[in-house]
Length: 180
Image 1: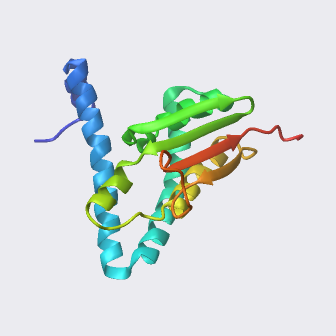
Image 2: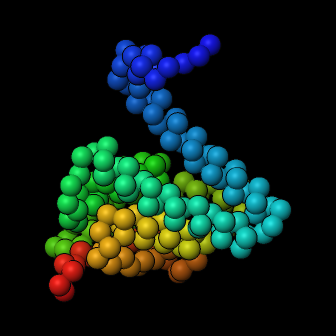
Image 3: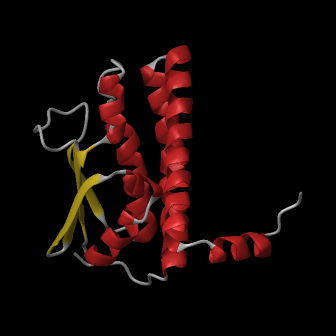
């Protein structure tokens, strides 16, 4: 059977909202399952360092693409701290992270993960904490720079950093005018 975009859209449009949201969540989760399985395969064969380097390179590209596409899909023009958080909360990464917090304070946007499913799964499977700072840093920096090259990003904490028990990672995005 051949599927056509119009028929697929019609099928989705007819689906009850709750089922559509469940389907949407399933597909986001599946993206992350593939990412995790792919990473684990590389890690097993070539080690954590090689897997992390490959993962970081992929997610730097993804950050840039996702920023550009989300800006268009969500119709966001200029980017300030509030609109940045809105875009970031709609990334596949943030939608998959259930334990997250964000805030806007003046010219800064802060995004933190307080409950990380990826890290919890690794710990449960005796794989240890994944030093994800390199991967997440590249992704978030590419995401921010695609939206506005003047955004300054600071990683406040992310594994392998020492962290408080109630935060896995925390990122600050400071918005500066090009004349600052």
